[in-house]
Image 1: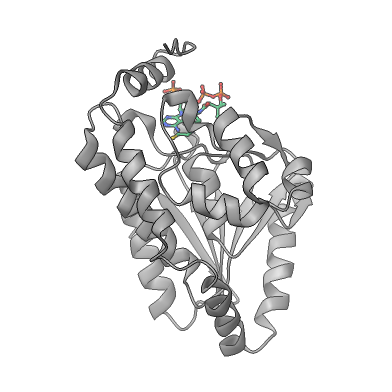
Image 2: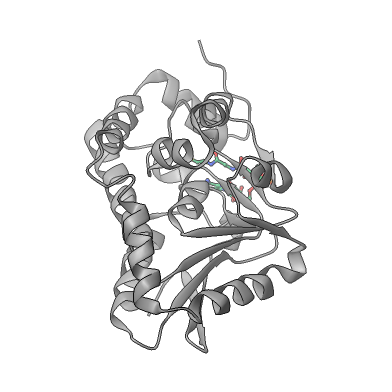
Length: 256
Ligand code: COA
């Protein structure tokens, strides 16, 4: 059914792996198509009571949007891409059933944004987080400027987004980006335990809590639209062309 996701349902918990390990599970168009389908399935299938989202392979949760798809994009197409990414992550954030991210390695760019759209985040000790888009002459486009600011506060969010620095799981825990850190081999088991606790509560009440908390930052917020607009502004510029070419050519960018 899915091209890029592996799913396994056990006792009402759907375990979902983003499965492009050779590209560190980067989010290309197929992954987004599959995530939309996944959310349709999760909302409509009564046997699914909660979701644990993780990445295939030992190295990455998701290392970002697929940069190889950026090269040919101009402003309008880039804005459409960001809008679609935001819409997909709103589907996750607004899901009435609990969605946990089990972050098992790199969660960078769109990967960090995906994790932030989940209701809770558990990280393995080897997880790394960051919004490195400025290295590419870009900005986060899938809600990162808004959700990171909500989760960790303006100062810390700005530092991560304008320095492009990566942080480890301990630091991510310290600043409130993740709820818990576990040894890699215990991560999925711990995610399952936490999910079982949540699933033992009133499911309608859990759904109401999620919806009420989401009302703190609704999809109509001007900030999300501003992010799409400014993401689009970056495309087609010399700065972005240099940043993306540098990544694809495996060299450091030379910005003017
Ligand atoms: N988009 C497309 N391809 C990606 C990718 C991304 N976001 N992240 C990693 N890959 C690919 C690499 O190009 C490489 O492919 P190749 O083997 O065909 O050359 C493969 O995944 C493995 O990545 P590699 O860079 O060789 O692994 P590493 O361990 O040396 O470095 C990272 C890991 C995560 C530090 C590095 O891959 C990276 O910086 N990725 C981009 C992160 C990013 O900027 N994300 C935000 C995008 S908006």
